[in-house]
Length: 250
Image (cartoon, rainbow, N blue to C red; front, side):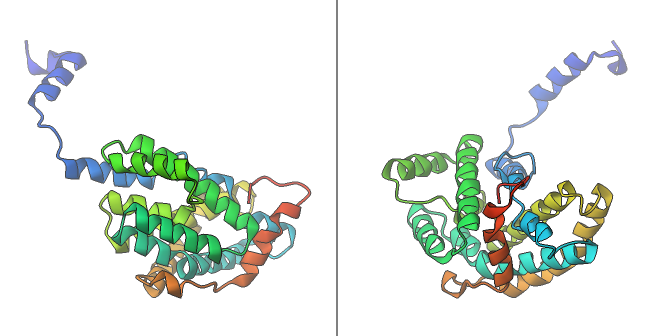
């Protein structure tokens, strides 16, 4: 039978027989992409990073205000959280993770943001330990930590831990965290009708240049150097729980 008359099932069988098994490194690369995929159910889209409260407080009322808010949020993320991503990536072990978690628990003063960090971190650890089965230590660390109750499961240290175990280098892991923060805040802006889907895509592309500069500015710092650069954002997010009606959890 001519090759072009083969059925799809026959062709698929031939491919499965002839292809070589993928290497462990290749599988890790697919896992790295999946970690950054918005479809991964880690709960990031349930939070607005204080944007909803800022809208109701009239701090953000238009495209320029939104752009400024996103940039300040990225600056604050870089200064406060990238040190935890960096340390978690270069030392992806349970002892380092627990130490970073306790330090971040003591550093966060905003109760709304603290609960959001724990919610997202718990979801990320649960999903990562179930999905990335090629790294059994994730499941072991999660089960051990749940049994002892010794950590709060904050998001940034867990993200750094997972990135380190998935083979990210420290530069990529820190930029990846900035990327998902930018992605999630602009998604929140879209659902709050501050910008349309096309405008959101344009805004994300434009702010990527700023995000690159901010990432480089705050990259590879020790957790002892973590700090707030935009305290107003922290204050506004803390007001989220007082909103009469709200779409997001934080």
